[in-house]
Length: 89
Image (cartoon, rainbow, N blue to C red):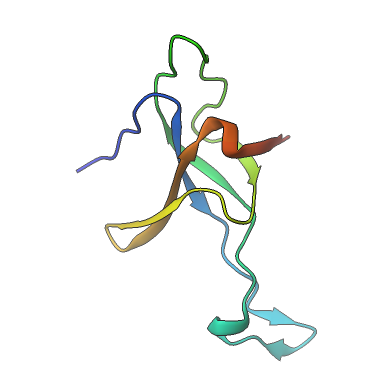
């Protein structure tokens, strides 16, 4: 099964959280939520807003952006294109 976002939504695979900082192992409860990831799938956009993101783009997004979902054992975020702050080149 494949996930295809609708309208102006994008599916993002978040980057993994840091496991170690300076030799200290960070427990899961203290890890910062990553604020960047890779676009896995995009919708078609809307009549008012053209889809400018594409699959494979590395993006930055806000701390509380998107809705977390689990699919085939992997965690993804689905969010509106407007929740994406920047594309990393």
